[in-house]
Image (tube, rainbow, N blue to C red; front, top):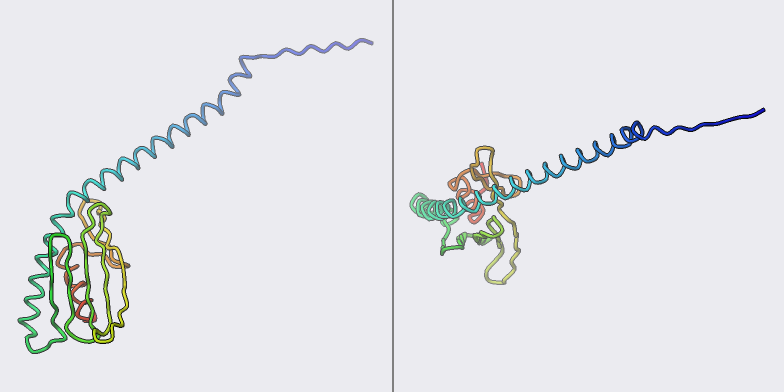
Amino acid sequence: MRFELTVRLDTEARQNVMSGWIKRLKADVNASEKSKRHADAMRLHSAEVIRAKMPKFWQELVDCLKSDVDELRGEFADIVERQCSIFANETTVSLGGQSKPYTTVTVTLNLHGMCLDSVASTGHRKNGDLSDDRADLNFLLNGAEGLFVVWGERQFATPTDLSEALIRRACNIEVL
């Protein structure tokens, strides 16, 4: 009895089977890289838009804070608890509450970090007991490339809204 085994390898058919998964892998890698490039480009674009809009937002915020502080002094001339002082320069604003517990809110423009750095110090001035609450107020863009600020869980779309929140914090005025 004689067995004869003949093996014939169809290299063309084998090549089509093997290259199928490799081609799918290549397509997946290309799609992933394209998606990453698009996401990177969107992040860069958002950063450029934020950096371009931050100075105007900052100036409007400083103007609004000054106006609101003056208006508070006028409306509550006899109620020192509803007043605060303001110091402002090109990149920093400090609001100081006028009643105990004394609170000072300092906000600094951080163009490179695309945020406002804030420190709220609360305590009694005589004994020097102060507690600091530090936070970044981050600038983000909405879908229409409108600038807004995120502070903790809250969002502020206008300098006016943020001004109110900062002054309320400095004067220890609760939101009603």
